[in-house]
Amino acid sequence: MVTQPLSAGELNRPYVGETEKLLVDIMYRAHAIPFLICAMTIDEIDGLVPKRDNNAQQGKVDGISVLLSHIEGVKNIPNLIVFGATNRRNMMNEAFLWRMQAKVCVGRPSPAVRANMLTPLVCKDSRVFTPKLLESLVKITTNFSGAAIGALKSNLIIEMDRNPKITEHRLLELADGVAREFNVWFGISTLPEICRLNPTIINSTQYEDNYSLDFEKLIPTGRRLIDYTDHKCLIEIKDEPTLEKDLNKDETSVSCLLARFIHGCSTRNIDTIQTIDLNFLIKQNAFDKNQIFELLTTTFLECNEYNKSMLIFDIDSLIMLNKSDPEMSKSKSISNIRVYQFIREKCKTSIIEKTEANEKGDVTKIEKWIVMIVKDSWLKNQLINDIEFQKSISQLNKEHEEEEKRIDEETPRKCPKCLRNYMPKEARDGNCHYHTGFVVDIDKPNERLIGEKAQAILQHSLLQKLSEQDMPKL
Image 1 (cartoon, rainbow, N blue to C red):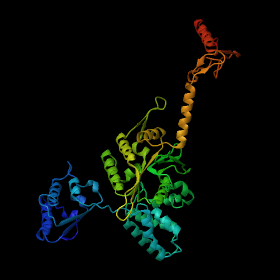
Image 2 (tube, rainbow, N blue to C red):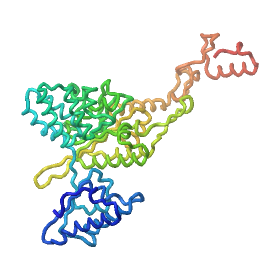
Image 3 (tube, rainbow, N blue to C red):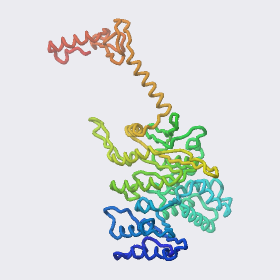
């Protein structure tokens, strides 16, 4: 090490040129001993090498130039290795990222890894930490980092020393405190708090088959559509009609659907779940369009770093529909069209695949799930057409019935009375005795009139300028 581990804040100096001088002095320590491999570690490096745009400060730009010139630049130091750590990779300078030869994502643990991390709690008291309770803990710690799970384990052990008979309510309180401390949010709330209000999230054994994403022979494409209008969950299947499942009666909001999502992710060992709705934008203080796009980009890039991830979009709350006066044209349009286009293109990137086996024979599964929650029927049809979402068997049958009806209405028929051909879709009441209806004079209900005769009677009455009371009631 050419110096002790540093943070970007320690390297940023208030006076012009001091930051660049400090960087050069540290890096040239490695230049003085070329026969040794030297390392420099910088934490929160995004503060030192931000993007070079119109808003960047000149001092920041000069610091970036110094680093780039000494890392595979004109003043390259071959025996110097630079280690950087950041939570905001999308905010870093692209040229600096290109020169970083290796990029490693330290993500959140998957359900299987969380189960292994929580298993040692059994040694504390196997009567309390039963397999069922550990399974519940795995669910309520969704999106917890390794440090957050470690903090929760410590809190549980301390609580067990005070109160050996820990209740489920107290367990959720402890998990809620850890989630708030480590900023693990689902919308404007934490998952443990949502579980207190909706216990079915951790007690969903009766719906396991309905919630499961484990299919024996079917291969999903990674796209799911939650249709509030028909109360259906549609799962797109590769080279097959879309799989259709019924939603429960209480599944009317994103928080109520979390039980389905979390259990489904457990069956496929998905690493992270991210819900993106209006509450998510509010919690992250993203109000104008630039902030929204920056937040969406950051979230997408983070999920792409995982082999298995699930993005959940509440489409209605994100894009907002403009509806005209219902007494007039009843037209609808999308308000946030750029956000809709952004999400629409992301919905086309879902993938379920397996990588080629490596030298050891290990195969990595890549799963990028996209879930779209839609309430408005017009918006649902628009989205399905835009992303070319495959149709279910019931939808295909309905279309087949409509097509058969259309063909039947366009097939010529012969009237048995007048022996003339007619098209059922063009038929009008009174045109033919074979048709479904006739024109009837209310004063003479037993007399059936064909269309021509009824029209002649009406025209004759108009020419005579009869009063409204004397007009024939046809």
